[in-house]
Length: 118
Length: 113
Image (cartoon, rainbow over the protein chains, first blue to last red):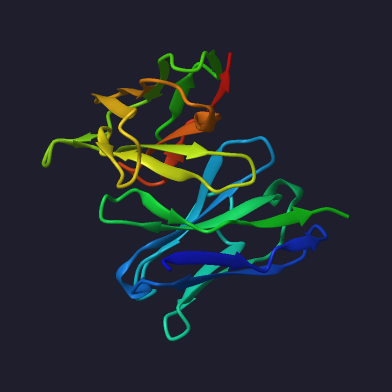
């Protein structure tokens, strides 16, 4: 089955860190850009970061630049989002999403919830 | 950043009737070299990730019922559900992927009247 599965979310205090994982299966993940998109409760979807197939190119939203690091381990078909210096406004469901041949996000994980609170 | 604005914020339509959702971008998302609009539509149900319905503004994703259609070009786009079914109750989002950062509309909540 073609799928993305996120994990690693949870409750963390402000200033803390978390590492999210996104496991890809059923397709050759090295052929695709993968993005992270987040959604705060009741809010719109917001793009966070992206990485190309071999991990050599990355981009970040201004709101997370310098705090989040995206990476991938293609031997494990897994992508990561290392989140440092977390703030209350980072509280959201985090999705990983694949960019398909259409250039749109054509495959999404089920999401993992991150809550930043003391 | 390109700002995406949807209208209305919420919409109630009777079963079997037409539902129309609009999306406006703050700048054109039409790439002149290939004449493609970098605009997609997604459906999101509670507790689920977004599901791709339409890409290139008007191309239906595989497996999406033909009651869903997309139209528009440049800065103004429309998602139309020709005959509303109960399973279409959801929040609908537009996405521009013309430039980075990719940006979404605020969402339109579609309900049954």
